[in-house]
Length: 248
Image 1: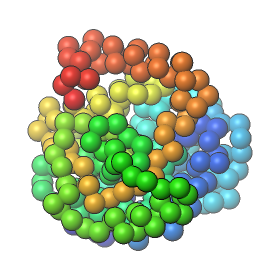
Image 2: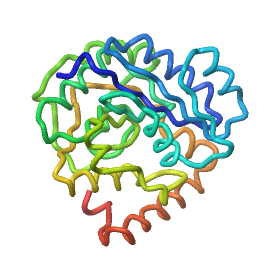
Image 3: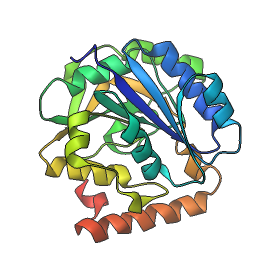
């Protein structure tokens, strides 16, 4: 495992300071590996810039909301880490989250992207569990996050809520496709492109993190969120000639 080199954690955000601050706090509390945090702000007006300045974070301020894929590209362009990690602002990380995922990432040379399991995710990354408070969730994660390669799974897609990959994959696969802005299916597109370059995708099934659940898209406009999902699904079909719902 590459446990000495830096991991760049890129967090796009838009008017989500209440989420971002909890995310940052959890990273600082539960990450024992070397890391840097890069926040890419999509034109927020809620004090995000002031918070990031006071917190000593690397900060990119975009003048308007350019969407999740563009924010990812901006952050990745200045990242200095050997490992690159895209993280939603509504995620709260847990004990040993990064060390477990790095162990999975470096378990074979052809592994391109690794993702965790979560309480809120699509596909195989969804874990059904019973909990009542975030404190209780963290206690479950403390017991859950014990290194166990038997829980790793090869898959065709990973959800972009927590997306870990090596710099060499970024160098080969390139930028995220901004046609999928403001977001959704840019992660499916990236997974598909990585697999076309012979990289494997792996669920680190021994890593459980908390995800609030599409807070930036769905909470304010559920009807618009559904329309966006269908629009970007069609963009994927137009680009690749396959339906991600069937292939992935």
